[in-house]
Image 1 (tube, rainbow, N blue to C red):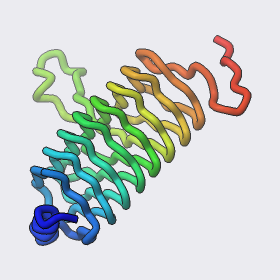
Image 2: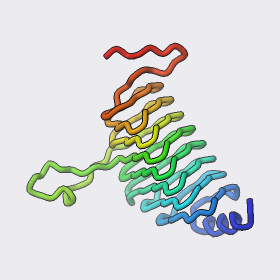
Image 3: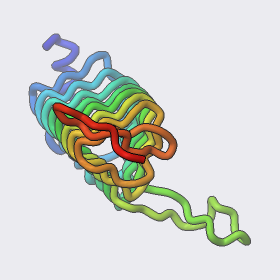
Length: 199
């Protein structure tokens, strides 16, 4: 670790709840709006990452955050990211209630994951003034989201699943599935001898 990285680590260590000495920042401007963020060891941040505004953000060991990743939590929300997970550049994760991302996940650039949407039932009131509603999002271990995937509130993506680029996941995806499309539908299961699912 170079002199610059050591200085940055010491600076952030005074702000974060826990930063291991092996955290690596590469020419980073990390915008932090939240106290109590907990990082594991050897976090890699490529640059211009935003973390805020809540108080319950846990990022485990060996996580890598691409350039311009946005991790937004509301004061009531919580976000956890498991060990050895990669989040690609320009991805956005919003947690009003709870978003859980497992270990060994690959999240490609430009993905959008949120547990939050607006109510819009009252036609006599602007949508922006109607209450938010939130449903937990769970992405289990060893999931790969292709570029530009959107994961909507209330969804669980099962372990070992692959979601094709630009898919919109609006319903649960079983473990070891390959799903594509808008809305995302399971195309087949992962196995040594995969068979296409009947329509």
